[in-house]
Length: 214
Image (cartoon, rainbow, N blue to C red; front, side, top):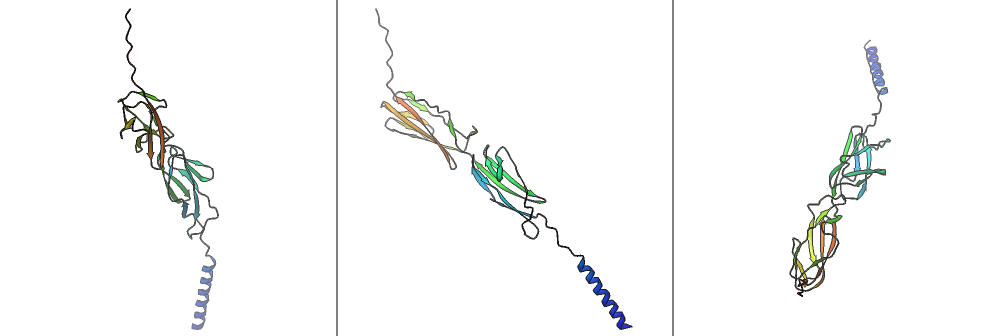
């Protein structure tokens, strides 16, 4: 009887173990991590870069459905183009590229630097001055969207210091010699720069006309 009981228990145990093994199934792959490139970006206004990503499951394997939703946190700074090309088409500042697949999510921080496109306030005509005159140049650096760039550094250089000198704040001090000279105005912001030349013509003052008596 004991032998039979042992056999019966053993047989039952084998049956249970066999039954448990037959019901196991592999885990369903789900999006767990998104690997993106670049991990961050710093670009100038007007520049662009391409986003590349991979969606992997809980085992670290690439999902067969390697698709994700890609959006931008601020469309006033960034613009999405075909083939996941992101372009800095608006104002300077910071924004994010957001990539989502299921519960997986990652972001790419992007910094857009300003580009000096022109200098407002200088004009393009030659200015007539007289010896020992003083003129202050006002140059306002602006980006391609006409926004002021406060961090831009503006410098002034005289083409002929025998005719005029220029101070750091744009004050032009004309000398005694007549003739032509230029002041080169340059604005720099980061890797961007823009220069504009302002022409001057030094002439002798015109003597006032004296009315003739008859």
